[in-house]
Length: 326
Image (cartoon, rainbow, N blue to C red; front, side, top):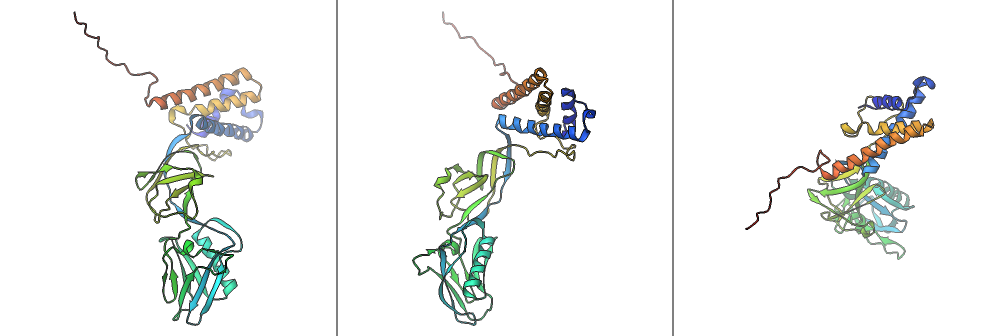
């Protein structure tokens, strides 16, 4: 059943004429109520079962006291060891590309040397490169100033590789691997990483810096899901969750769209819309009757879902009387 058909049914049930006001205004109001009916039904049943494959994205935090000690040895771009704060303002949950942009601005402004920090979104590592070339070597160390927090390991990993013109890090120590949940997300059912189910954990258990490895736990907060330990590469990431369908357009452009509910429940948002419209016109007895249809449909759906059977009644089983020994 499409949205347009549902609008027509709801108006007929509520005995509203399109000619009472401009047709577009009337239909737009009914579309809003139909959308509300779908969402209210999904909330009352705990959402519709859905699954989605997600792509994780490494994110990072920086504070104004995060720094590295930076040295270029030899060549035209030589630079003596110097402590470099990595940002001028705190950064939270930003991608590697955004972190690289921020750090590059610091290196350019404070040092005046031609070097570039880049983030490899495929291998998930940072690297520093001397743009002038020549026989140079870049070194990244712990800052000497006591007011700075060492971020060399957290950005470049525990083991870095210094080459002639560049410094290539390992997987960053201070890396949070998380991603946005789907827009229709209501609540999680299960989470799988590379075919293995993960265990939920409180958000407070996810400390920074974290550890890297194969994920065993997940946490959800503010519509984002975070994994621990942090994976060092993308694997099959599947979530099964309860969803609430997104609103359809109320200007009529989605009137040909099928209702997102199962086919035999397409009348449910019609009952809700009709009840709201009738209440607007002070026909409370009829509004209560339509709401009763809506509530009955919710209970029917819950019962069928709980029983996992197409009938509300248990199947008949064979019964044999006890044998009586004389």
